[in-house]
Length: 156
Image (cartoon, rainbow, N blue to C red; front, side):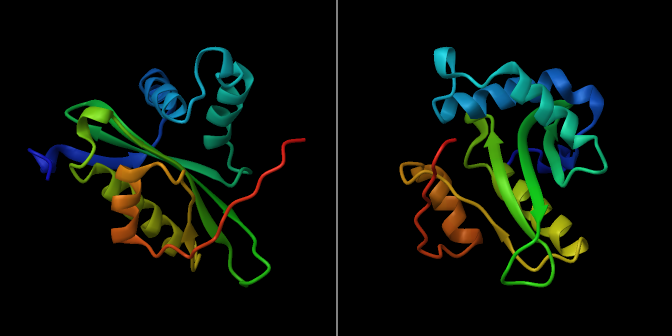
């Protein structure tokens, strides 16, 4: 577990977090191969950032902060579902500084999303990851149930 875990704080993102968030966001995107010539367009990053602070958007973000440094992020989205009356919560992005993986930060970020979803009246949190994300899946298998779905996507 984390040394000095009492110094770890999971909190909503603030406008002053941009530069530290951007480093984590770039790390997250690099993990999924979105870097260099395949990097996200700057407009996507700027739009994502702006959505966190627009109360009309269903997009939210928490960060993990330890000793004054951002060490992790989680982004989540509430949306309607055809199989439930209440909104569901899609945990879209989860990233912890690579030097701190396996220390409980990811678990606490997921728990923060669970808590926010419960508070919002949601009855389900779900996410997806790449099959090859062995470390992430080891955590996810402990905190959620793999439902066996395969994801298809078609870019337009």
